[in-house]
Length: 340
Image 1: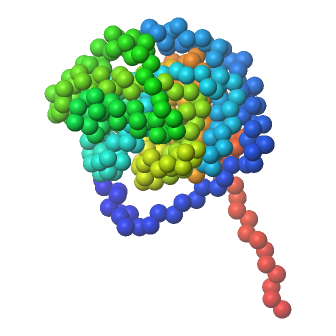
Image 2 (image 1 turned 180 degrees about the horizontal axis):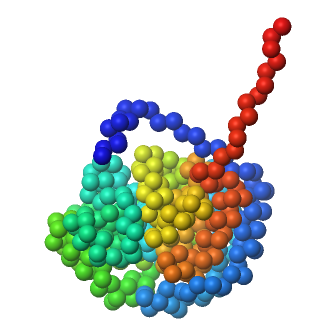
Image 3 (image 1 turned 90 degrees about the horizontal axis):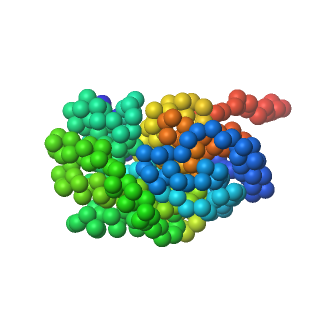
């Protein structure tokens, strides 16, 4: 079903609203951190050995609005590897390069309902990745990154994500080497995609670029600014630079809304109502289109691989700041006096 043809040529209207004033947002960000920092449930990721060594007490919360104002509390500037959150921004860069329809046909946008690293999801769909937020789809997306060589593709990933963050992001070599030594499943998925013709270059080189992109170092502040760039129609609200088009932002946020939180995506959207993406190092970015974004970092994860404190803080801020996309109130029209 090609829904795009039904609205082709129709000018898009945008209704977004705005965040409350500076003082209120600042107060609520601090309140979110205070309310959630005592929660110590969850476990740090251990399937990547170096991630098991992180301090479980770290916790940062940041809100960046579409005007470029940033509110941060706690461990907001502690750096960690971006991991799967990179999938969202690499997808945006690839959409910018190839366009809506081609990427849709190559990668897909539907939830698998299975684990993020599922091989079965590939086999059940004749080798077609279901969406770019699971590993199969992310590998297919990374393989599409512009660049004549894997080195050029990697540099385009690094510089592209740096433009989203508004600063130069660097590789965490320790995390990269740790992941490269344990990513046999991703290599198997890439080989499987190659057998179906979904990856047309060396699949092991694709896995290497993907492993590097996951090992880029970011902070909760970076995530908030990156998310705010998607919220601001593709313009980084801090640097003023256009990174991607508004159409690409719409596409990316639509995919995040349905698939960004793994098997918990439906429940997340039901309870919190924001497009979001998490990573196993403990980061979460959640985006309120036209308003801004929330970036959190706390390495204690639930069974689905999502930060426990980060989810709680985002839920609080979504409600307190009025960010839920599906929330509304009764419209009462103004009464006018009849004319004499």
